[in-house]
Amino acid sequence: MNISPLQKARYAYKPKLPAVLAKDLASIGIELGKPTDSIADKGEMKKIFAATYGKPVARFVKGKGLDAQKKLTVGVILSGGQAPGGHNVIAGIFDGLKAGNKNSKLVGFKGGPSGLIEDDFVLITASFMNEYRNAGGFDMIGSGRTKIETPEQFAAALATAKKHSLDAIVIIGGDDSNTNAALLAEYFVGKGEKTQVIGVPKTIDGDLKNEYIETSFGFDTATKTYAELIGNIERDANSAKKYWHFIKLMGRSASHIALECALECSPNICLISEEVEAKKMTLKAVAEGIVSVVAARAANGDNFGVALIPEGLIEFVPEIKVLIGELNDLLAAKAADFAACKDFDAQKAFLAKNLSKASAAAFAALPAEIAKQFLMDRDPHGNVQVSRIETEKLLIAMVEARLAELKKAGKYKGKFSALAHFFGYEGRCAFPSNFDADYCYSLGYTAFLLIAEGLTGYIASVRNLNKSAKDWTAGGIPLTMMMNLEQRHGEKKPVIKKALVELDGKPFKAFAAKREEWAVKTAYTFPGAIQYYGPAEVCDRPTFTLELEQAKKK
Ligand code: FBP
Figure 1 (cartoon, helix red, strand yellow):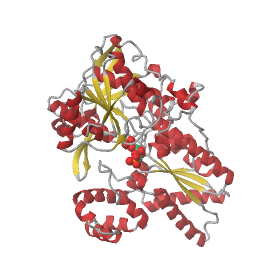
Figure 2 (cartoon, rainbow, N blue to C red):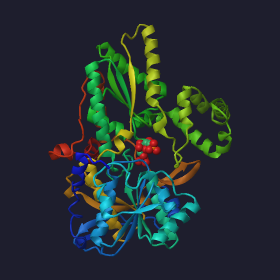
Figure 3 (tube, helix red, strand yellow):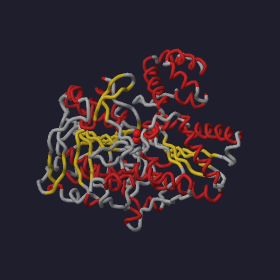
Figure 4 (cartoon, helix red, strand yellow):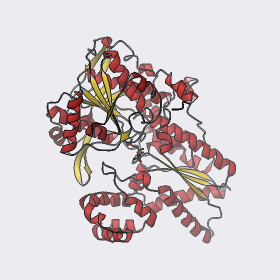
């Protein structure tokens, strides 16, 4: 493999650890809190997680002396979409294991959870690990979206765990993968198997967070990468003064990525899906809002601009949300009938017959190319793949049509020429920022300590992230604490609740206070590229979202 100068320099970077973890293992102790409850549906959760429900919050402290010398064999899985820093989580687990006992082993299961089911693995050696330290991507062992859900899959995971005599498995993933981790932990305890299961909060989407998980890893680097690109586009727009750029940003359902990028770049428009839902805005009303900004800027002679669109927007428009819910249930319940439809016309006829009247009308009103994107395969967790729905193009078409009407009526004299962009994959494998490199390494090290302590059904938690790394705290929280029942594939299932943008939260309020000014005035901010070497205020700065959210606790 050719190695770039930056890659070489990053191999040598030593991630910062919280002071409490930077000590001898013998001087790290654990403090356990009171029993916990799930966020909702306690009765059902207690039944589903009979063996692992309600464990206490754990926190590592100095002084009590943890016994971490035991020789361990641990498996690790990267699950779901890529997020910068995954390799550093593995490095943290690896270094922790070796610090405890140099004969401990780390087994990487390849290609996501399917690697565990199929026993497709690689033994992680020191030299193999060193090729991936502080590097982006998940290519060290690969990732995948297979869900462990059938009895056969659980049995296969058990067989692999037994074959390797695994003391623990670490699942590095988002809300769905950590839900799977909770179920696997429960299954192993139920079967009397020693294998512990520990989760690690990963996802660029930033929607796996709560009081104990201040952010998921990858959000920092991905948003900074997108913000650099958006800033560059803003500068281009303001130089050429001839295009409106509609930029869709990854993030699945939640708008955290779009909101963070807006706080970083001060664009003319940033839609927030959660607000669209709260205000019950129709698709037409959303387009109308954009039209009013385009017209106001045109009246000042500014026929250019930048609009940010969260990828999940379409799911939050009330009439479309109902449509997607019905489609998910219908396509799960009548999969064979739907598969038998030979073309799009047959699919439309099938849907007209089986959807509610309102949803059938909402589907029929979509342009054919967009409507087809609603019918693409669901992901293994039953979610519609919003990254494949071209909302940015749909909105451009709607805005164009409305401006043409206004022009005809003599109410608009500007020019509207729009370009569509979609930023997602550009940011998921970037070299982790110093924040993500440090955070991920600390999460991995924490996961090892949770294993050494004999815990199962926990997710690693590193907190106080708006302070410098030495002041971070580390511990674990029981996965069941983050769960409730939700409708999936037409059935109620235990899942980790997604954290959406809170409209009364500080990040949204900071944006709402400025957006009217940004809409009309060209007040772009240019964040520039992520810096890895230089002053801490440039290189180690966390996201605005994290700074604002954690400020509330002071
Ligand atoms: P995770 O939730 O697994 O971290 O994935 C995040 C994400 O990048 C979403 O933002 C996006 O909608 C999705 O993955 C795209 O999935 P895929 O990589 O399968 O195309």
